[in-house]
Image (cartoon, rainbow, N blue to C red; front, side, top):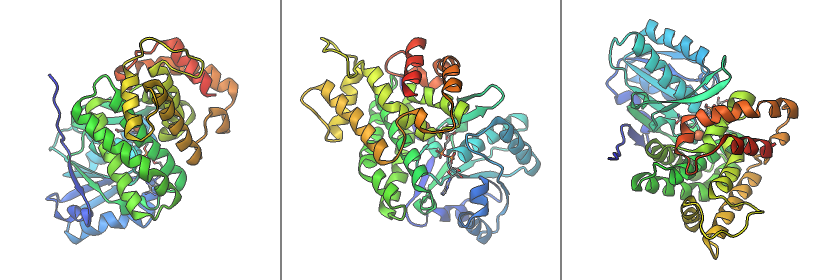
Length: 381
Ligand SMILES: NC(=O)c1ccc[n+]([C@@H]2O[C@H](COP(=O)([O-])OP(=O)(O)OC[C@H]3O[C@@H](n4cnc5c(N)ncnc54)[C@H](O)[C@@H]3O)[C@@H](O)[C@H]2O)c1
Ligand SMILES: [Fe+2]
């Protein structure tokens, strides 16, 4: 039996942040990162809280990639303040940290049901609607997703005004994260008609609007579209889960602090080649992996369809490489700078083991072996 449901109530469109004034909670813990807490954006959150007479405190000790030690500080803060709701404001790191903070704090002291209201300020992770929280275990040098329905936010507020300040490089990285979510969900072993419909729409929007949002951050229409696409892709992978791109990207984030979306963007063409079993030297086969059909359907939706399915998948790979080039995302780790070849190669085995154990890898359309993952990491150098 399969089930599909959307737990999170999504508020969007004009004045969506007004929900903060309307919601029935009285004592709110706002969790965000220092950049947002110090900038003008935080007032868009605190003004409706103040206007409606709510008490609030701000915890702004969140840092990229949700390290466990910062989550512990947040758990302490929540247990000291005992809020009746949490408002998470930020990119995936702030929202994932908030999910983990609530989960662990309530495991220690379930003083009340504490709803989580997630307000994304990047158009990328879709974390506002997913049951995933990716945490970074800095001591073990590994990043992995916690997955549980209890992590999912009760409400999400989508306001593209909050995204306008995202600089081009982060727009590029997070936008390619959206594309990776949608494509991995579409070909995942858990895919279903509901997740596929959401993924298709997200892919269609990214294809039209990501470059526009990248080239002009004030293009309100493109920003709004990308913000919705991010949420749609989040809903898609919340149902269908992800694949090897994410399993491998998490390790590049944990070991070398490569931004999450950037790591996905760099890996995605390699993983499609691997899953489909086609690459520049491969010969015609009488039968292809079933993912070839699904990837070629994506190519069809994008108008990249070629004279046969294999060529369509190649066109899809080339289109992703073209997007990466236009978004100035490096094709190789060696182009990033600050990472030595010896250090990188010495970690390939460890990263391959962690990628194999990552829960995202479990729904990859092709079951990967350790040697193939190591080869993909090496080829990425
Ligand atoms: N929970 C999920 O379902 C899920 C899915 C994919 C990825 N993730 C995780 O989410 C994290 C990445 O999240 P992200 O890509 O949103 O990046 P992020 O939250 O790490 O933020 C990246 C940078 O952008 C800045 N930023 C955020 N909003 C901004 C704004 N409006 N203007 C200017 N700067 C802004 C932040 O301060 C930070 O420096 C990773 O840890 C990744 O593994 C989670
Ligand atoms: Fe992601």
